[in-house]
Image (cartoon, rainbow, N blue to C red; front, side):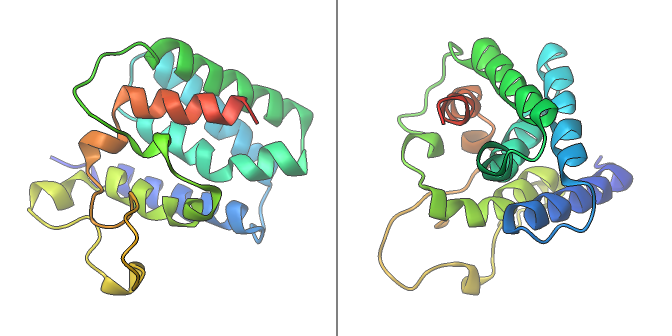
Amino acid sequence: MVNADAVAEWDVLIGEWDEIRHGYHMGDAPAKVLECARNLEASVAADGPDTALWTLGLVLIGPYVIYAHPDAEAEAHALKAMGAVEQALGQTPCAHDEHPCDDIDDAELDNFRYVLEMLAHPEREAAGEAALTDDELWPDDDSDTWFERRMTREIWACPRNLAGFARAFTEV
């Protein structure tokens, strides 16, 4: 059974992270980054079920942290947390031939909100609903990206995928 309060909390966080990504968050953005990094570290240490959400949340707000340098403590903690993800999950075996971390570009980060929403709403998958059904979210061209109906919880939450994103984050 899905905890409605937890899902609502994720929805609020995802909205705030998206605002930070786009540069119009009215709250204390460095504090949100620090909170995300701390929660990610705790989740990795506990092998928690929300590690994918915290990791990809930090990926979403990463450009703000790394390029804007809003707060040295938040930046250092974010890098440390992502290092912990790579260390803990990087050697995990999986059966996937490819992962989103292998070929995603910065422009596609604008769609990360939808990945996070998919991960935060397991009830949609359990009910047989597509994570993303709004055709307006998809480009009209024939390009093949990870956001074009190839999104699955299994692929995005794969430890190797999370470690790949964490590695890319720390290499910036």
